[in-house]
Image (cartoon, rainbow, N blue to C red; front, top):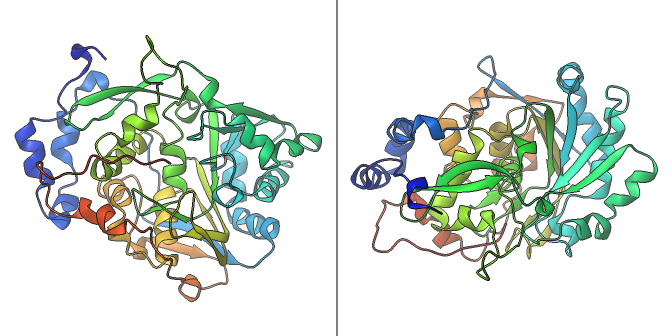
Length: 372
């Protein structure tokens, strides 16, 4: 990357001063200093957050995955019908690696969404993924997704096979802007993106749901090397500054890259050493809504995780692109989410993950990287 393409988001002193504040003060500041300091000609168009002061989230319980997903989509039928009109629908499953079914979206969850869409959408549905494994296409086969071609008009796209993307700017470990490339499909208004994932613990940012499913799929992972060097992975760039900056980079990505509709299949969740090597939780829940931040904050609550521990959700809420405040989330359905809380076992490195909440210490900040 040319030095001319790297610019400070804010002066180093101001950035460190801000990150050294207590978490509560940092969140209440709204991050205006950093946002204002980003060069105007480098900003991607922000995706608007539309709400009337409340974010509805449909919630249900059970064991029939297809029935449950249908149930949480129904309350939003008219909005979904209007939303997909004249758009190309994209379903984004979650598939971190291609050889562990528990880490991936279940085939029947995708089938349920396709079945629901049939009466209201007549075009081809794209099922797109950009896994941490370079070859996402093998996962489409391994998890049985390609069997859906027999009954539905679908097209599978391995985003990692795309060598060029749209430029986007995130933070590197030195608090400079780092130019990466992202899949245009997630920010192009001609596409209607549905995030479809499980709720899982994580090894860098505490938990993962719909927000991270899209934000971390967008950076391309072509796996090609330049001049014999290390293979390119823009996902790795997102992780380059360690856990603290990964939270912030997910927030930066979410300003422009968020799903239009979010569905959580929580029939089984993952606890422990997620997002890949954890163990199953028989949770028997499903959720859906347009405000991915609200949906994910409910995921955290249902996993027994204090929402304030999930940095990227708090950053997004503070910046006004979603709600984490439970009083601003309207639960739709006959089931009480509070009766379905299961305290998930956290990743074994959870203490290190939560260091993002502490005052920033430039000398001791971790530089660890993770997959996801």
